[in-house]
Each structure stands twice: as C-alpha cells, then as structure tokens.
Image (cartoon, rainbow, N blue to C red):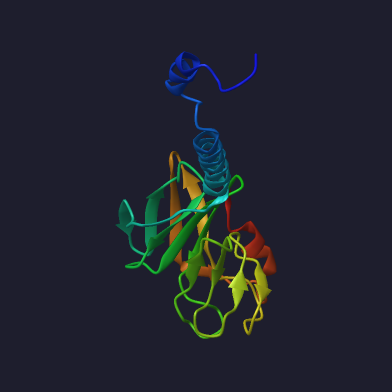
Length: 174
C-alpha cells in the first residue's frame, strides 16, 4: 500500500485513548512521579516521631499519670514540664528543659531528634546527648508502669552525669 493513509483508518484511530503519544508519555510520567511520591512519603511518615501536646490523666502530689502511648512518639505536657516519649519499645519521661541552661527543648521531626533552640545541643529520642554545649543527656524523671498507664515522679530527676545508674533505669520497657 502506497500513498497517503486511508482517511477511514485515521478516523478510527483518532478515538483511541493512546492516540497522542506525547499525552500518553506525559500522563505516564505524572503517574510514576505520583506513585514515587506516595511511596517516599509513606516511608518518611513511618519513620517520623510525631509530637503531641497533652496533660496528665491524674496527679497525686508530685506524681503524674499518663496513658502508655500507643505508638512511637512524644507527648509534651507543658504544665508539668514533662516530655513523655515512646521509642523503640521503651517509654521515657524527660524534663522539658535542656540540661545546659534550662531552655525548653524542641523536637525536630526532619532530623528525628530533640534540640535546644538556644545553644543547639542535640539529643536522640531516648535522651542520649549527641552534640552541643550540654555535657550530658536529657534529664529523666523516675517512671514506673501501672497497668495501662505510666506514673512519672516529678520529685525524682536523674541526671546522666551524676546518677548514671538511675538515669539508665529511668524507663519502662514495653
């Protein structure tokens, strides 16, 4: 067959969804990019340590009772100055203040760590010191499990440099 294409055949193919090759390639590229974005986002969301604000369920003297967090994350109780963290099968209760100069610590979700905004001391989610002007890990409150709750004793604060054994024991294993 020589010459120009049959006009009847061109009309039949004009209704094909893949008639325009450029449109197909554009749509396919957008689809693949969206899929990669969703896969990348779900991976990041799965590794993120969410931060919530909350308050104790109850208080008795210097003790505060909190529900055991359902998943890894941090709950900040500004009233009691407590950061409650569930991380890798453990629950910790930290003082909200940086051990260097008592500035309120902040969670940096992109870096998966705590940081002091004043002098940039950095801490892992379990309170271990990474770097900065501080010389020890985040101060941990005494904590114990009571059923489906944890009880934090605000009167007992363990400092990593002067009470390493108490600091290491100040956690609840799930």
